[in-house]
Image 1 (cartoon, rainbow, N blue to C red):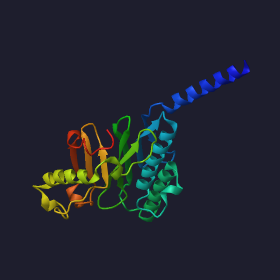
Image 2: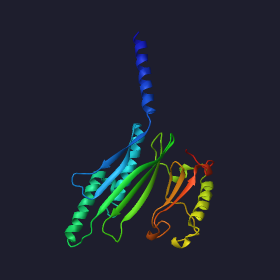
Image 3: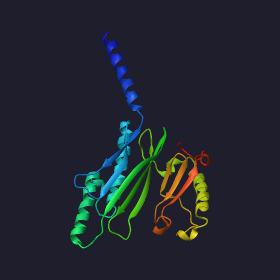
Image 4: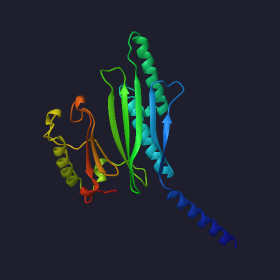
Length: 238
């Protein structure tokens, strides 16, 4: 009788564990600030549900935030929490105002995130950061973060495609078409290279070149969209 009872407990435990492992990955919006913060606004997606995958994804998002907030300092972002990075930037601004009290320049930082695409296999997130710390103009940067939806593992661009070479050739055709009538706006218009940021949305794949990546600041961000149907044979995830 005791053996049957223990077997029953084991079955229930395994069932509960399986249910927990299969709990779906979800996202909610999170605002991050501190008591002394006056210049930073952060609104990002926060993963929950699948505990391990959520932990990995949230850590990667937080690391991106910290890197953005400390991009102009010598501080190692990994040594700070997000809250500490916010306060660090605020303190840097206070030191700037103390050194240059006559300056009318105001600092500000805005970081926004959104889940661009989510399926049972992959999650694609965009983190947009705008930083203005006293230069001639603010700095805008967009980062695409791709994750395995089961494990939370960050995915490199090469891992998104079964045939990376085939995808590169398709992307090159779309790039040529995109800049055909404005080549003078680019550094080396005839020298194609894939962007650092490749992501997904409901329509297909997005190639995003940040400012200075292939063109000067005045040319802005270059975004190229490639429909799903064109890439069916090249993709690892849908």
